[in-house]
Length: 421
Image 1 (cartoon, rainbow, N blue to C red):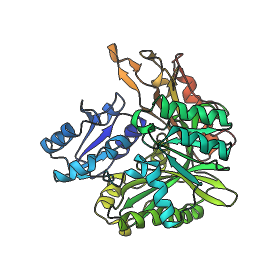
Image 2 (cartoon, one colour):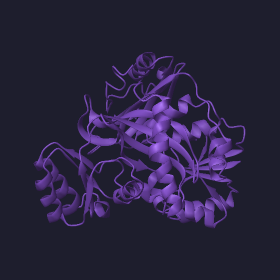
Image 3 (spheres, one colour):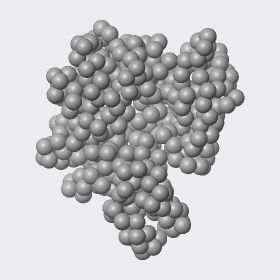
Image 4 (cartoon, helix red, strand yellow):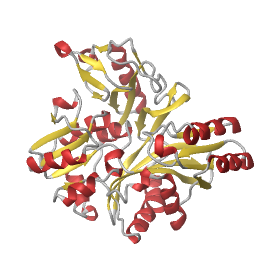
């Protein structure tokens, strides 16, 4: 198969790394890719949202399967455009991608089929949103309704924090049109876990679960980010609970999407809160999380490309997945100043010293510099990952690898996976 992966982050590097090992693969491209991806795929200088150019490239190069990594091209209709051109695309249509593209759309799905979730209301008027906050009090959660690259959620512990979120999203429009409407919901209490399912419209297979770390600082302090680390497996979310959530949350949503005439195919990512009265849905995403993708694929024993092909062909009922009996952990190294104003252009050295058995390093916001140097070119720059027989052993290995990387302008959280074993 000729395959085109779309994206340029650590998630897409992990996807390319996994797909490159498939016996089904003939040639692998990635658009636009990054220096790490270039070691396993041919990078193409086409932006992830340039749908016209991506379709033309796929046609010119006889691409058999397109695999979008990030959510933005899915919400923008990359699957619709590829399928209109006769090219298979692993991902939901634009209509089905509204499960991530609109928080209120997802809440409508949950209400229709009684999926457990937080009580909520949607607002298009800032004054009405503020009045609701005053009535409900804090803690309370304010979410931009549209896509915000993981940064449009404020868990407000005080009414003032909630009001500031309304001001930023609706009045200052820091997220543009994505914050023109907001969803305000009760603050769920418990432990968060991310559950991933491979879906073919009618059926679904569990792709595993992980715990991720969204805040920038140790001890879950500071602003939300795109993700600073993750680990799997999650000890208090065993396979029996994964299957229960598949039946109680994911399958009902898939059934409702079919009923509405917009079947969902691709990766469905359920962000869950493990509350005292059971698991509740925080949100759906329509792609792998980053860096959860990295840790899940490190444990996957089955051929990822075969799994994607089965989902595209509606054959998951005849498919199964196998996993390595290991733990995996990912730690994001970010440029100083992330997430607000990451510094650019610093040189990263020592990746060869960090390399060792059980360690994989995936590139994200990085660029190639002179003399084969690797330069910081984004917020999240590297994802350093390790596997081991236990989470504790993987934890020790990943931080030993990070210590070997020479990048004084970078930073990471030091508590990813700490105490979780």
